[in-house]
Image 1 (tube, rainbow, N blue to C red):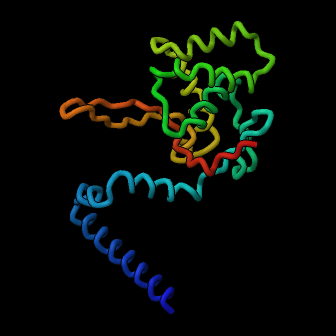
Image 2 (cartoon, rainbow, N blue to C red):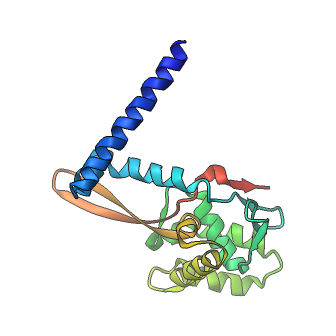
Image 3 (cartoon, helix red, strand yellow):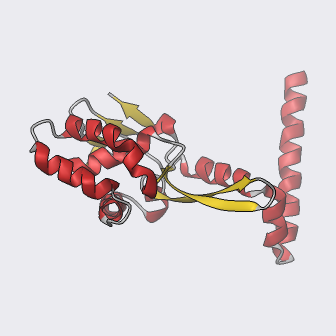
Length: 195
């Protein structure tokens, strides 16, 4: 009985939130609604709303990327793109492009995993381009990854699979503020299956 009354109370609270949300929207005060909800919760709600449309991403032993819940469609990427993608999947906290050099060995490991027979000299040249902060190679690879996912699903769903920007505010001391320009894959990691 106690469980039912607790559930009923939560339902009543949800109805009250819905009523108040409607009033703020009718008054044209989405700014107040956003302030009340907060951006972190808004992102959590966005993920919750998308879950019904997202597919699990299976990375097979032979490094094929398969969208399990989209009819087992394969995500067709070149080895270098797969290596970049696997690096960002492994770092849910995000990576700044300018710091990719710090991840060079790990990126090489992924590259060797997906292209074990590749020409080592060409691979090292590719890694040089990817980890050079003055080179545009990493942006080109991320654009290609975005294009491939966008061809397989709607833009909203694809936004969870692509490598995208996320600025994080940092404060050092009392008056120094800077932003980490992290690149992340926002797909919830419970949707990623490593075979």
